[in-house]
Image 1 (tube, one colour):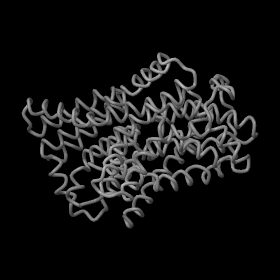
Image 2 (tube, rainbow, N blue to C red; image 1 turned 30 degrees about the vertical axis):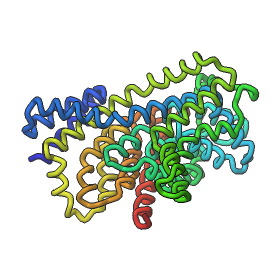
Image 3 (cartoon, rainbow, N blue to C red; image 1 turned 180 degrees about the vertical axis):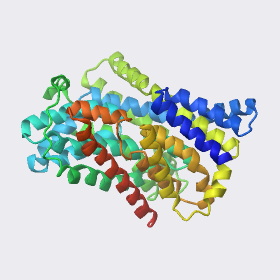
Image 4 (cartoon, rainbow, N blue to C red; image 1 turned 180 degrees about the horizontal axis):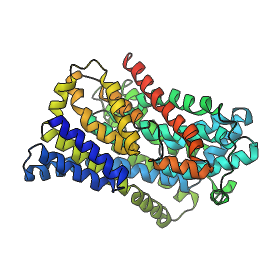
Length: 438
């Protein structure tokens, strides 16, 4: 019976979000309350669990996601994204244009939220297409596959950062593992799959060409653009390696641990970006702070969705359902990584939102980490891979791609949806391979 109640709760979540178009945060809270009461929890216990779940989940993430949004906004507004794109295309040349766009999408995708990166980068793709005379989907999909994979796999993006907290993983380790898994997924979903798309030659609507393009002297330099965009990755990725070169417990080791802490790394990155991409570019501090304020406003809906998912997760724990599910699944022969991917993929196809799918699945899969001893960092990546599975008509990303490239629904299914499926499946395979060596 406890499992049936959970399944009915998830079904209700899918119906409320997918059919009735109810706000995801409201849907999560309603389902959390319903599941808690149906599982026999006292009303005051349900309320306390909802509050605890929201607080414990957001405590760490508000800082990570807030500073992540600020950094992405500064990279976008300063012209750093445009500088990276132009410089890489010039360096790679027309012959290797796809790889230049893929690398651009990967670099820009790490600090920048998906929807922001999409809106900024697609007009640049159109400009490149006009200059190179190559089909737009052929040159555009590699960049968009990189944006999608970073959104689903890598911190500081909302879903993977939240999964790190829920699963009790290590953010730096997840980021390093995620890089290993992301590269083959992006290559196969991007340049390799793009080879089949030359027959498509869409004509985008004129209004999407009106994005602001900065002049050469208005953009920061290439090195400072890349350095600032990737600074969180550098701090989080290299700090564990640097610690191996110094004596444990020494002042140097403590300093490296300090700058390698996720929160400190994000704060450092934003402060550096304020000066390298803002003040040093001649902008007034008021203008820079205005950009940061708009960035915070943009992530409010995402934070509420994460908060709602945290409430449902805590209800499952406090009601004892998580333990019950763990007992049922502990003897299942299927790998927990495959199970996490599969459950997340089903919810993703049903609901549309990658974030909702990943966080809902995490609440179900959490007990298996303790039961099976599976690496929580790999569970983050398996869940993230599942959250990208087969984007279709219930996903906002599907419609953004369709409208910007002026495709039919059928064409979007054959291009965008297939690409998302490729990066999801390749991601799972990469996680399973990685599980054999770490």
